[in-house]
Amino acid sequence: SNIAQTCPFIFRVKAMFAKHLMIAGVVAASALDDGTECLLQVDSLKATPSLSHSSSSGKHRVFYNLYVDALINISRVSTIVRQQLSQLDPERHQLQIVSNGVAKNPRTLAIDDLPIIKDAGFLHVPDGQENSTLQELWSYCSFKTTDPSEVVVYLHSKGSYHDKPAQAGWRQYLQTGALSDQCRLMPTSCDTCGSRMSPLPFPHVPGNMWAARCSYVSKLIQPKEFQNAMEQVFEERDGGKETRCPPRGGEADNCYGMGRFSSEHWVLSHPSARPCDLDSNPKYAWGEPKDEAGLAVMSSFVQNLKEVQRLQPAPHGSIPAYRVYPDCQTCGEDISERIKSYRVLYHEEPPPSWWGWKFFRS
Image (cartoon, rainbow, N blue to C red; front, side):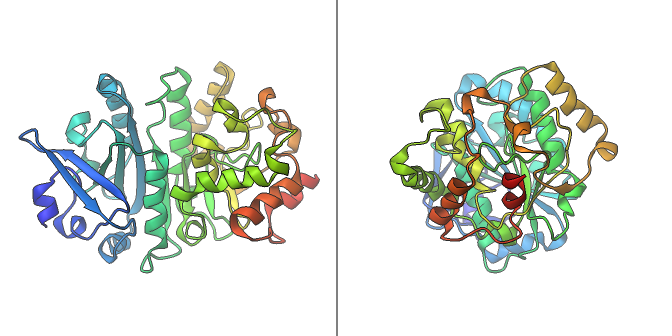
C-alpha cells in the first residue's frame, strides 16, 4: 500500500495489487504531483499470487507496450494510445502498461480518463524496449499460480516510432485479431493466435500483436535474453555466414529475426509452437503493407469481422507466397538451418506435429 500511496502513477491499481507486483532488474519511475521523481527499485520480474489471482474474475489480461521517444511526440502518440485502449472493455480486460521512453504516467499522455486505466497497471521504464513488456508477460505466465490454460494478449503502440500513413490501418488489423473472441477462445490445438502468421523469413506474427496460451509462453527463453540467444544462433551458422540472406545490420536484421526484430520472432521461436491465424487472404503475407491494395485487404478483414475471420492452423500456402521482400532473398527457407536454430535456442528437435515439416517439404 505504501507503493500505491508514494508512487500513485507507477501502478494505477488497487493497493493490494501494487504492493505485490515485482519487476525484475528495472527502475520504475513516475513524476509526482509536486514535480519530484518517484523511484522504485525491485528485484524480480516474477508476477505474484495477487497478480495471478486477479485473473480469476475471468478478465482477459492484456500487456501493452507503450513507446514515446520524445516529449514533442506526446500528442501524436496519445492519439494512437487512446484509439487502441478505447477498444478495451474494463468488464472484460485487465490491462498492464509498460511505458518505455518519456511517458512517466497516464496523465502525461492524457489517457487517465479512459475507463480501462482505472484498474490498470502502469510501469515506467525510461530506457526500456519492447522486450521489457514481453518479459513481464513471460513472467506472469511462468509464475507457479498462473493457470497454464490462460490466454494473454500482447499489444503495442504501433506507429509511435515510425509515423507513416500505413501504420494506422496495419495497427487496427493487428489489434482486431489479437483481441478477437476466436483468439481468446482458441482451441487446444493452437498455442498462439493473431490476424496473420508468417513462416518466413523467420516464424513470426507480422506486426507483433497476438494472443498466446501461458503453458506455451512459459517454455520460451526469457525475452531479456532472447536477442543475445539469436546472436549465438547466427554464429552457429557456418561462422555467421548466410548465403540466402543480405548482410547483417540495420533493417536487414528483419530477414533474420535478430536485433530489434528479435522481439517479433520471440513468440514463435520454440519448436513446439502450434500457431493459428485468422486471415488467409493470399494478398497479404507479411511486413508493412506496401500500397493501398494491401491496406484494403486489412480494412476488409477488420470491417467484416465475423464473415472473414476463420481461425485455422498456420501457415497456409507454399514458400513462394511468402517471398514478398526481394531484400530478404530466400532467407529462412533452409529447413536444416531452421532445425539447427531450435537446437541452439532450446536444445530440442521439432516434434512430429511441427508445422514446418509440411511447409518446407511442400
